[in-house]
Image (cartoon, rainbow, N blue to C red; front, side):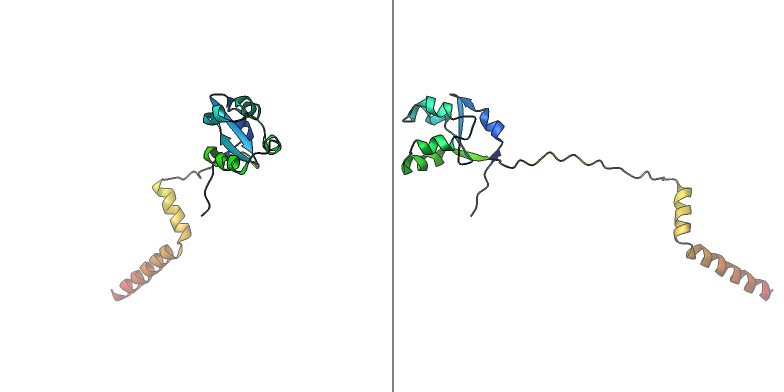
Length: 135
């Protein structure tokens, strides 16, 4: 099952470049090696020099063993976002002004449903004519 990893920008990863907070980037993956600085066989300075940039070449040139590469997984925290999405401007939403007056609603309904008032007038006229003939 694939796992989701946190994405960091290169600029964000570069901010973690002190002995108290040290991130290293190798093959597009970010490792927080702060707790490993004192245990690193090459010394803390080697790791500190590798912060703020892609240190893949330096890592490969050092000829690390398989066990060293396996140990790196303990310090993995995320990946570099190589294709950051540009900021998408927020859309403006406009609301159509609505007149809530009774007269305008009635007028709109009469225009929309003109057959109903016409039928009422027609039926009223027929009833009035029939009633007038009976008398």
